[in-house]
Length: 177
Image (cartoon, rainbow, N blue to C red; front, side, top):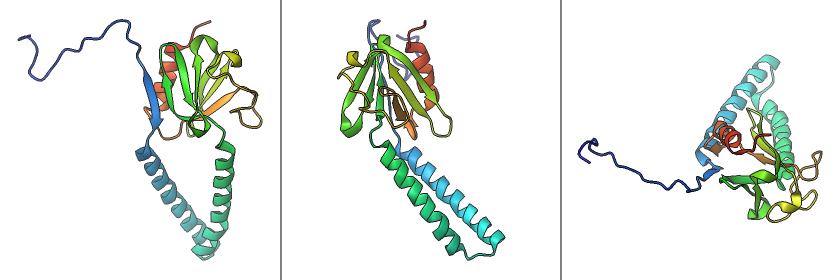
């Protein structure tokens, strides 16, 4: 014990302990993203108003209404999708669904699980047998229009730890074929 530097401690873990990685919503990342979006939009409105010789408030009214319509449409479309927190255990991937419900998919039951997108990352999961998930999935229960009836898409925006950690953990945990 005397060989250890002051302030360092020894951590003993059992070999059969199941490491769990939890990905959750980061309000700090969300606030930073909103601030950057507002600053960027203000700069674009100012440049457009200067180039078009229009008052800035007319430009803001025109494009602000479009922004509100897009935000409302996106919110409406995403209401049935899985959301954070997302947990990865040695046995399964656990998603939080609409209204706080939980879905657990064993790693052996995953046809695919991929993180797609850089600016707006999302996890796309497809189970091999939807009836083997806990609870069993119904067709279209969590899927969005235009996707397969059992394809789950979870938005990962403002997630901590980031999408690169999720990519690494999925590569480590998914069964290789």
